[in-house]
Image (cartoon, rainbow, N blue to C red):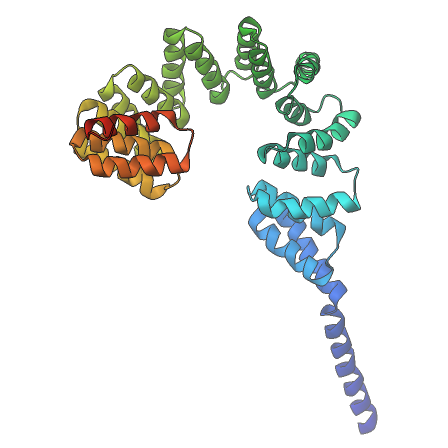
Length: 352
């Protein structure tokens, strides 16, 4: 009787060991990580999804689903450099996946590789001729007059769809501007605002159009409307500050920038505009302080070095001004204003 009890105990222990071994098997481990990853991805918790998909690939390096989803998770996080190799790998295993092709096309477009971008979205448009995202990439890669006309034709056809997004109309406006047809560009931008009346981006683009095409009061009116209705939309405040600066309304420019700095104290573009406004007011010391902050935050910004040089000239420090101008022209050899200012300083110092 005792031996039977011992045998049962041994078998029970063996069963537990076997089950534990199964639970720790690579397949079980992979399934657990994959399940977690898909749940995270579905809840748009992309950072957590990245970790779990990476765990899957440590077990099976070429798992197609994990490769694709890891690429998409990185893409949604804005980590395009990390997404790119996984997108390429996913395209190899599944060349007909339209989402992968579209993401690759977008990355190629941002990397200024229009031919590669067009190749990727061409497949998408063959299967889904009215895919708005693919049409946007296609439009932005148009280079020759023939490609621009073809893109206009496709976007004009797509914009008749009831669900066409505002950004499609905005892309169409950009194409019309490239053909110097301002009237049709304006119509497309007005349609974009009509499609999405609450879109601050569409209204800002319309304001930019009016500011560029000799309707400044209309442009300023729209900017004021945007900042009143959506005060958290910083690009409109920055544009208001820039317009006021161009009109030499320095206090008005600084007042608009106050809103930006409350939300983003180290906003690079805001600091650059603020330094220029203070320089215009004659507050040289304050301008130098702010422009020094800009070059510290972004040493490669040629514009910042140039305006800092202007501030040093205004302060009478020509030696430091020349040093900043040297930085500006080193960063951007074609920076004509910086070269001209350098020439003016050389004349002042007798270095004819």
